[in-house]
Length: 120
Image (cartoon, rainbow, N blue to C red; front, side, top):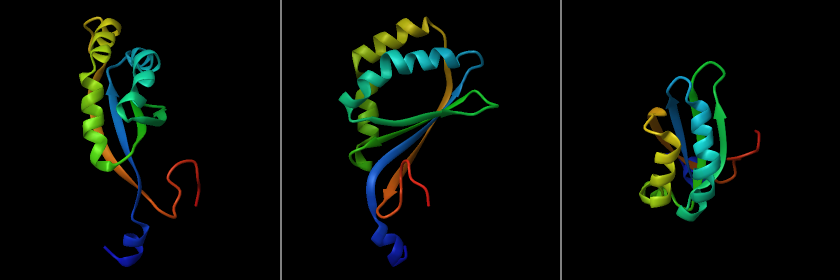
């Protein structure tokens, strides 16, 4: 790694989660997020930054921040183990499968460069 990139080092830890949603289930996923997930996330060290969808596909993109990159997996594990999450998700899903696949990409913010809301 060159010196410039090393000097930019880590500022903040983020994860990008990409949800491939079954056809016709986007509204259900949005309901799960609004009613259940968003209120619980901060209790587990997960701070939502934003959500986006694609115009042509049933995909949802979520970026969240965490205190340290090393905490991302344990934060999500804690969230998914919470009985409120498990019970609420079962209630809303009603035995339907909403999401086909979730991909997670770990992102590390760089000092001196905008990581959210800024432009070069």
